[in-house]
Length: 203
Image (cartoon, rainbow, N blue to C red; front, side, top):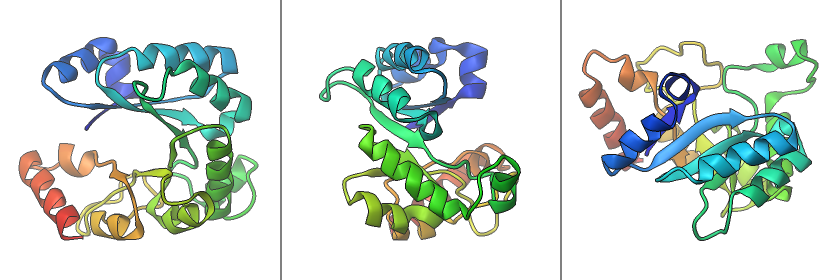
């Protein structure tokens, strides 16, 4: 899948999804909706109508009513994209969470939000590799776990705090890995992508 995030969507809008879909690609629409239930409901309904969109993100911290509204607006199970609750951004560590009023270790917050997302009808969550096993224990084997903050062993961490290598995330039980800058910022993006794919296959 190709991820269409807020930067590309803000620049090009639905045309970006249409262009990638026309190339035969499935889309991970990573817009992290977070608003009142009514607004998110309409946004998810619009996202669900875009061709080839398979995954859509919604901030789990928006609460049960918001997530349930998103789930209801997404359409029938056979045709709708999978909905993912974003737990705690991988750029945030314990100190950063405390400064915005969220006490306790990130892992505890992530698992609590994952349980809330599952209760609200989400198909899975976005979480760091550090919390995969705890989420599996809390939410079961069928719950999707999409893992950002993926960095090969020799790559820079950039602005990410809770990172993992591709092989570590796969071995921990991730369903999907989100890989951006280790490919897009590489001197040879194709070679970087192939190396990551090989590491995933080996894991």
